[in-house]
Length: 151
Image (cartoon, rainbow, N blue to C red):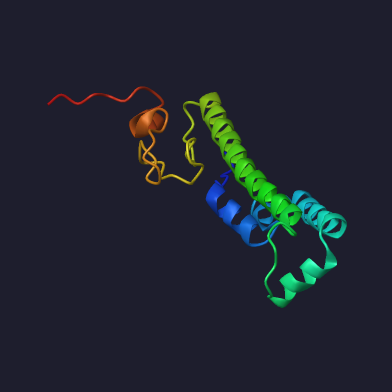
């Protein structure tokens, strides 16, 4: 039986990463990477940003953007990394799902090789993303090619 895997939304990972550094990676279940980005953020802030700028930022006062630029660069890199990581994870899930369904062509599949969501075995397409499922519903039930109806 094929295990159903969920697709992650790259825009959501980027949005969460933009709100708080590392949250996009937590959404992707990349715990060490999230902690790593947070550690890099604190290290860069400690080494390159003036304590007065951090205090003014925490107090909600006006801050020169150039004084906190290193922190913003690390945060931006974290957002880009979360987005790219989510896209790569989705591509890997799609290719592994398609390879798994190609290994067992006569066996009904329980998840779409395109989007990874669960599908109804009676349908010959994914009702989530409308991708064609390999073999079609009749082929899966009989183990052969579907018959064509004459009109």
